[in-house]
Amino acid sequence: MKTTLTLLYFLFFIPVLEAAELGDDGLHKADWMRDTFKDLPEDLEEANQEGKRLAVIIEQQNCMYCRKMHKKVFSDPSIKSYLMENFFVVQINLFGNIDITDFDGETLQEREMMSKWGILYTPTMLFFPQDIIEKKPANFLAVASMPGAFSKGTTLDLLTWVNEKMYEAPNASFQKYHAEQYNKRRSASNN
Image 1 (spheres, rainbow, N blue to C red):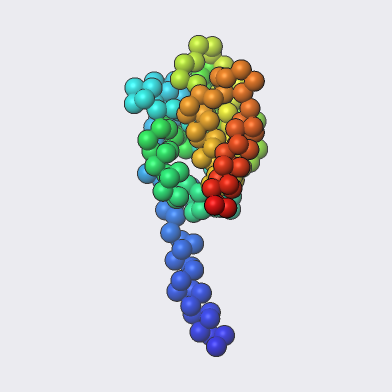
Image 2 (spheres, rainbow, N blue to C red):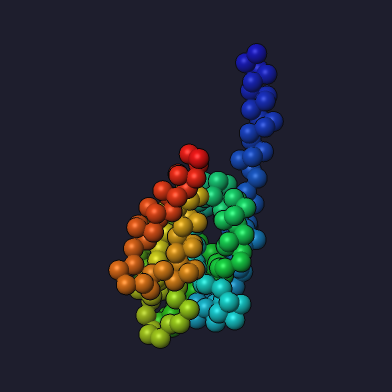
């Protein structure tokens, strides 16, 4: 019996763990991510031309929270389609060596830029306004950040909050918006 259970585990669960596509850099790859030259002013311009919001996602190899987000959250059809329709997402490797050009004009390797921005853990997503007037580092220009692994509901709420520019409202509060959405989902599931 124990041997049968072990065999079933390897047949059914191990393929699921390997289902997320990994790139040559060891990071998860999704079809809603863009492969760019990592020149953020240019990426913002391209995002605006497509009518999308620019976001960067910072990840690292062997990150269990990144894996969780890709397998359980980003793979959800409603979240995946929302990302594809509304966001221009550029992936950055926390410890990578590819050059990034920041909004302030400085070009550094990924790992140096992450240090400059004060990024300590992965995944982290930064979301940017459509118009950037001042030349400042990206971490000072972001309208919102998603530090860590969030649930599906929280992730979708944050994506919606950013995309619909709810941060521009007087006394804008993501926590208040999220609590309202959470209560609506909870009420709907109880009916």
